[in-house]
Image 1 (cartoon, rainbow, N blue to C red):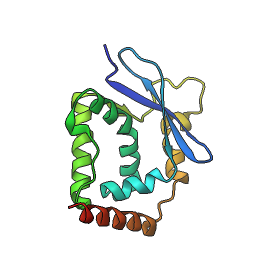
Image 2: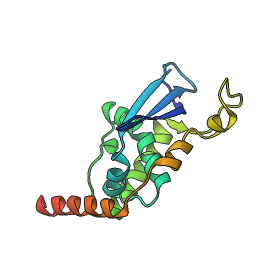
Image 3: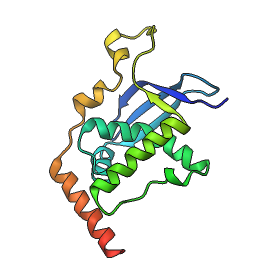
Length: 155
């Protein structure tokens, strides 16, 4: 049986990237690591019309599952730029909802018995992101303008 539920157990900051560790909750599989460049937070916010850091974190958490879903032949999991931010946001939210229902979900809560780590770190492994990731709204707007120019030029 494939893994249907993953739990984020650790988030680690490197000099240029953040790494998320996914551990399987059910099914057969081992720990998976996914790394994202630090600028990915602002890029995803601009690409998908996201409005909060928590939305960006959720989008990044589901990127590996969406890529596996796409690799399995689901055309709705393919990431593509939309003509406007609201459409891009709605498309991404739909993709994540479909992923949860049909493919798998990502949990960020601590398992009932945290083993060997502090209760606070186990309770919310994403807190480090919330504490240290800063979104520059001017940079996000600049990226979105570049996307809009690109889409306008290719229409």
